Amino acid sequence: MKLAMQINYAGDILETVEEVVRYESAGLDIVFVAEAYGFDAVSILGYLAARTSRVQLGPGILPIYSRTPALIAQTAAGLDYVSGGRAVLGLGASGPQVIEGWHGVAYDRPIARTREIIQLCRKVWLRDRLESDGIYQIPLRGGTGLGKPLKLITKPVRPQVPIYLAAIGPANVRLASELAEGWLPIFYLPEQAEAVWGDSMRQGLDLRNPNLGRFEIVAGGLLAIGKDIQEVLDLARPYVALYVGGMGAKTKNFYNDLFRRYGYGDLAEQIQDLYLAGERERAAKLVPNELLERMNLVGDAGFVQERVHAFAQAGVTTLMVTPVGEDPIGSFRQLRAMVDRL
Image 1 (cartoon, rainbow, N blue to C red):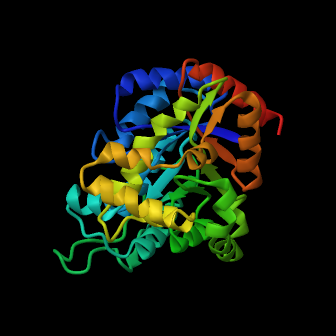
Image 2: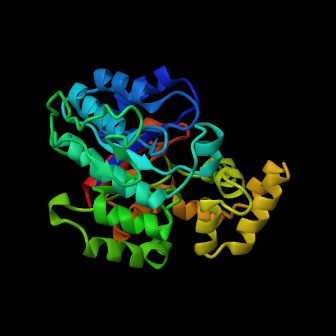
């Protein structure tokens, strides 16, 4: 089992990069850099490539609507080059609130668009001439009429950069397990993973090209190992409430839908109603303790070891953790020892 961390889009980025350097020496395997409507992920990843030597690096995620397929592929190839072959490409559809509200692009056909982008990226990395007659018309039909099929001028370090797809809906999870090297689910509950995603994963895996290798699942949560630290879980409450209650409209919130599928339908509705009414603290207080305990790795060493086994048994191959508490690096080192014993 590998260990990953995600750099958030808030806070002091330069300070966080220095922390990543320390975590790399403690056994960190992968770093994902989030991108919403703050700094872009790619600039930070380039800086990380210069400051690190071993960890894999990737956006977590690049929204598929904010860049053309060719630019996504160029970006991944460029990151792979400057990092010495350490790049991974995290992709996802994000949501209409950000895509239409920030990028000014229609949030349409996310599944078909994702499939097409993955296929086009792999053509670029193989240095095939880029042509498409799907959602993306390449060369553009119409326009000046001067466009012609082109191929990547530079030679990539690798002919294929691993793609990790962020997905929680059934169709998207099916697509991830069919076409991507890895999957980035949010709010992963190991005990419910089979019931919620099992059928979708199997359907995708049945169509998967064996050359893609093992399907990597990257999931986890807060990390803090010690006694009497349950209050650390309170750090997750506003975050969960934001997504379940406010990350989307009343009628279209993918994260709210996920919590309903987990069996928390009434609570999901209450959290959303309170959050959209501006009562964010009340919404956060409704997030149940037992849910937070199972989605995160917070507690004494014995409890965290149990959670590591639960994630592993559910198929997770990389634990994505956010070390917090009084001794985050110490907790990370303990976790590294735990997963090494699996």
